[in-house]
Length: 221
Length: 296
Image 1 (cartoon, one colour):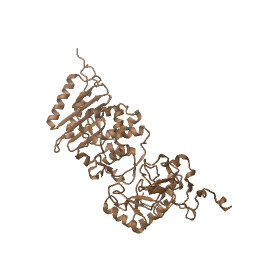
Image 2 (cartoon, rainbow over the protein chains, first blue to last red):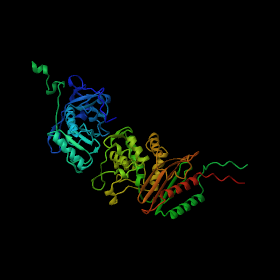
Image 3 (cartoon, rainbow over the protein chains, first blue to last red):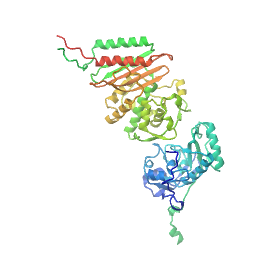
Image 4 (cartoon, chains in turn orange, yellow):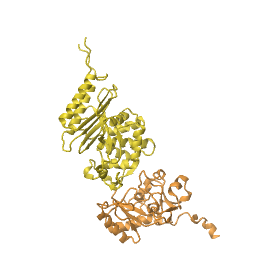
C-alpha cells in the first residue's frame, strides 16, 4: 500500500550514509553523460548561467530505490518516478540522482510534519534529467532540489485555495524555499504545488575526491 | 431432399442491396434522424455498400479509433512501447488559443483514469480505457503524448481520407468556434478495414488494436440486435446531436465485415442507439442470409 511507510527493510546505511555509491558524472558512459550533462552550464529563464550537478547517487535497481529511506517518511523511489518523457537511458537501471536529493527529502519532511499528513509527489515531480521533455531552461528539478506535490492527505492541489494554502505553509517552514504562483500561464501552476530550494549543489563526504581536477594525494605532496 | 442451405459466400444481389437502401430510408424517416450515413465493406465477398458515406459529421468519440492508430504508429516507429508509463495529469491546452482546460470527471464515462491523477499508467492501459469505456481523460493524455500531427500523418501515410483530427476531446472553447474533429462513414470504414485486414503497420499491431476494440463495453448500437455469438470490435460516439458506431462484425462461419453508421439528430431526439442497431441488423441480415437454393 502506497500510504503506509514500511520501515522494515528500509535502509539508511552505516553512520547515516546512504547505501548507494556516489559517482562522478563526468566519468559515466557517454550515453549517460549526454543526458545528465554533469557539471555543464545551462541557463535559467532569466538568462542566468547555472551549473548542473556533477555528483550523483547510483541507484542499482528499483528494489534498491524502494528500500532506501531518505527521511522518516520519504523513500528514494518517490523522487525518481518519471514517465516516457524521461530520457530512455534513465528509465532503466542503474539510474542516477543528484546528491542534493537528500536535502530535498529533509525539507519535505519538515513540510510533512507541518502538514500533519501524507504528502504525495507527482510523477515527473521529483528529479528530472536535463533531457526530460519537461526540462526547459534550468529547472531545479534537474538539481534534485524541486518537487511537485499533487496531493496532501485527502486534499488534491488542483485549485487556488489548496495550492496557495500549502504554498504558504511551505514558505513558512522552509525559509528560502520558492513556490510557484497559482495560475494557468507560463511559470504558474494550477494542478500541483511546486516547491524548490534553488540550484543547490551537494557533494557528500564519500564523493570521488578529484572533483577539483587534482587528487588529494597530489595536493598533500 | 432440399439442397443444404449455406451461409452466403457470394455477393448480395443488386435487388437485395436496393432493398437495404430502401430499408435505411425508412429507418431514417421513422427515427427522425437528421442524417444517416452508412458504409459497409464485406471482406468475405468484397461487397461494399455506401449511403451518404462521404458526408462529414462531427466525429464525437469515434475519433478515438484514429488516436489509437496514432498511438500504434508511435509504437511501430519505436517511439513508444505499450508498457511505457505516462503521467496521468488532467491539464491540456486548448486548440483555439492554448488556454489550459480539464476533462471534468462527471462528464467522463470512466473514473479509473481520474483516480490515477498524479500517478502513472501504462500506454496500453490508457488505450484500453480510451476505447472500451471511452475515457476522455485517457484520450487527451494519449493525444497529448503522440501529437495531433502524428495521428494525421499516420492517416495520410496509410491513404485514409475522411478523418480529420484537429483537437482533443472536451475542448469547449474550440468547440464553440467550430474547431472539431470530423469523420465520414467512408473514412471510419476504411480505417477499420485496414485494421481488420491486419494491414495497419503489422499484423501483430493490427491484432492488438482489434483486441482493444473488442473490449468495447457500450453495446447498444451495432451489436445490440445481432446474435449473441457474433463478436463485434467497435467504437461508439455520442454527443448532443450525434450518435455513431463503427466496427468490425464477425459472424460465425464467415469472414468479417466492416460497418460504420453515422447519425445526426436534434438535441432532444430519442431512439438514437435503436436506429443504429436496426441499421446494423439490416446489414447483418443482408450479408449473412442463406443463399437461395438453386431451382430446377
